[in-house]
Length: 358
Image (tube, rainbow, N blue to C red; front, side, top):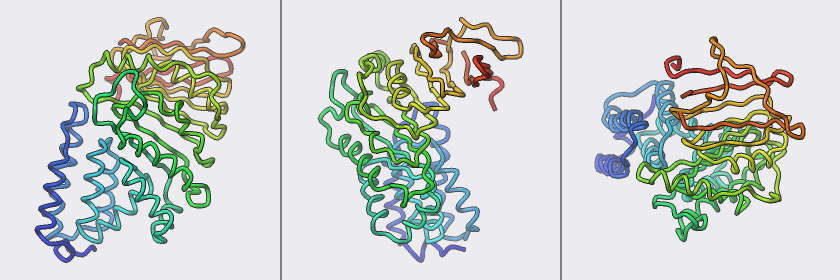
């Protein structure tokens, strides 16, 4: 059982901390507001309940793990990271156990903190070495992005977040993080050229086999601006680096040229996952190594060019050009999830409609 919070922190400290969480809580979109509302309520109840109740360690860790897995914004993640360890020693230990498995770096400051942990803190080094399986970076740009601007658009905090990624790549080599297999980079309100313009992935650790890159934007960013930024990215000529060890690639919110460039950078790719952006055409060549394709189409995705069987599956053979498989998708209206698996030269596509989703 954990010690009571009152043995660790004063009432004034708690009140100040919870007020800080309230002040940092941003306005959420309708899609995420439900989860974050309950996350916020739970966090506010922690300080009250911990004063009079000692929870079983297993329950504490289960709660933190469920909350940690939510798709939080950078500010929400920071609030969680700076709040939960302050409840008491039991909550702090459970938080360390959960956060060392799937590490999140929501800003440059936490990146520097992780570097300090890796290099100097013996206890946390052992946790990371035995438990860490994924690291997620968030590059959050609070201002409205500008078409034609550089990656950092003159804002030092964005540049610092990007630089932190490179610094950590150098620090998480195999001996320190032998179980690390997944890296995710989530850009928010940022341009699409950073990875290719600044070659941020040339130092990707060799033990990483799964890579995720996603671009999202705040609701107040006009759709026409996002579309203009997406189309501004053109295919790169002669990318100087390759990630031969990446077997699984997940891309979200990007355009066709971006997808083609990332596929070219992963010559041994086996599984490709695409989160299609609304009103975006994807026309890319799939390498022979790709065995499966997972598509998350926005509401209203139009794949009517293909005739679905009554069972909800489709067998198709894409046209071949120079022995390459070509994929063409137009995201403009209907399916929620499509799984595509190779069978010899044929593709079998299974479609799950929204009403069938759990």
